[in-house]
Image 1 (tube, helix red, strand yellow):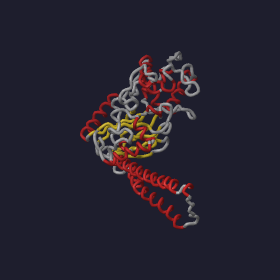
Image 2 (cartoon, helix red, strand yellow; image 1 turned 180 degrees about the vertical axis):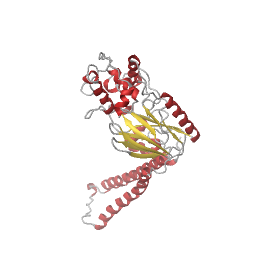
Image 3 (spheres, one colour; image 1 turned 45 degrees about the horizontal axis):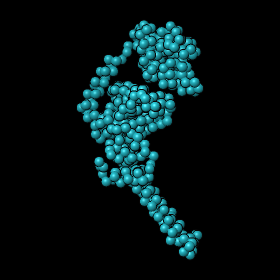
Image 4 (cartoon, one colour; image 1 turned 60 degrees about the vertical axis):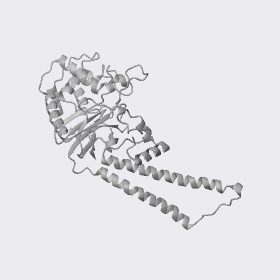
Length: 389
């Protein structure tokens, strides 16, 4: 159902102008579409998103009015003053009245558009007095969330099964309702309803962009810089977005899911999450046996490394080097660990220091004993912990 007459008008105008944004919204899966008018922008669910939606609608109306006035006058003049009727061209050369009119009218229109646009942009930049502050870090190709006031930190990654993604010929698994817009359970960005949430955004490797249209927030995450943004969800619910920057081969696999909860439920989520993370935290001083570390490393590798180096360790020729038989995975183990911790300058290999000591020890151990490398090397978490310092 159309919520307001204003949205009905905006929808009609979007259809008329065939804007790129409109077609993008049409591809969203069920559950994230803007009501019964999927060719329009998504329905706003926050105050700032409402301002953006109204600004877009107002400017669309102004542009359409200018279009009809200009082309109406032009086509009328062509028809009414055509040569076959003996019309004589009027001369406006150095006509001061005409020059003033075609200067003043566009100026007035621009000022009329500039005032509400400036108010919205200023409001978007005002991140003061936030109730919750979350540091958001973009990785290839995941989002890291760190609740600075509560000590909660985790990584959010795509949950869509690979057999759906690889279903190019329609012979594999069918796509679900939230295809490429779902994250692993328990890794959504959880926020309280009606409270201002400040985001501090940065990136670990390349430029990403955190974008949730229904909440009216979009901000680039740039390595080496901290940018801020904010949003406030008006109602409980699930809000979905994506990385809006062309950040690499898996750019389309960086979904964002925001779960807005009432304050009491949010407080319970915080307590439960702290307890869960504490239980799951590994002891970096634990001494692991080689088979156990290799088994864990296989899972870490498949979740974080296989997208580039492939599950077979063969890499992608010309883009990502193979690890099977490579000098990195068979050379000095300290150099291997250094590349995982710090990345390699001038290549797509970024630092993976966000992984735990145990996960890094496991993945390095796995890479040195998989695909025929068979080095028999074992890297303990305590060695990773020492290498960080």
